[in-house]
Image (cartoon, rainbow over all chains, first blue to last red):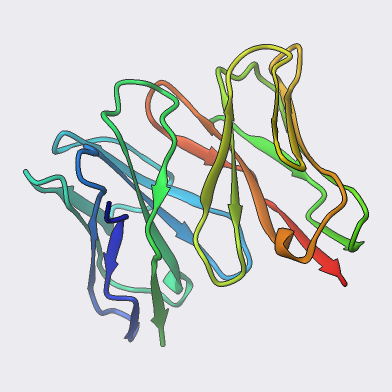
Length: 115
Length: 110
């Protein structure tokens, strides 16, 4: 069974640019989570999508947004990039998100560097 | 929002020594999960605890959930070099928001 996949693996952008990151969940999983992990730090919750809807978001400005498609894949968009956006962006999926405690399966992440 | 404190931030041990990381919350938790992230890798789910006082074991790893469901611990007996990485606890709310602790990074000296 294929795991969570993310693309691209690495990305270099400059301040002010926009970026789109992509995530494909495990087949059968309807929930997708996005996290930001700055170098050497913990995971900061960004967004949760389930069944195509945004269900919750973390304490991030509106320039962080995303969506989930009918096939449950997801995109994370970041506008007006700032230097501090440099981080590893992790996507995770889990089965139907009606329970509060489904385990999350993480993808390999996208390493974003903002110059 | 929900916050979890994880200690210690770093732990350096000699191979064969034991290791413990703790996760504490000021509020009662419905559940707690533990993940391991190897250097350069992504978090991998280890275990989930739900019941008060629950203890689960996976080989050399022992996970505990406090009686008051406000704290949890992960204990590794006789560490090996393969145990290196960062161990995170995570709390999920009914709203689907996940809060991760800051992690404990374990290094093991052979």
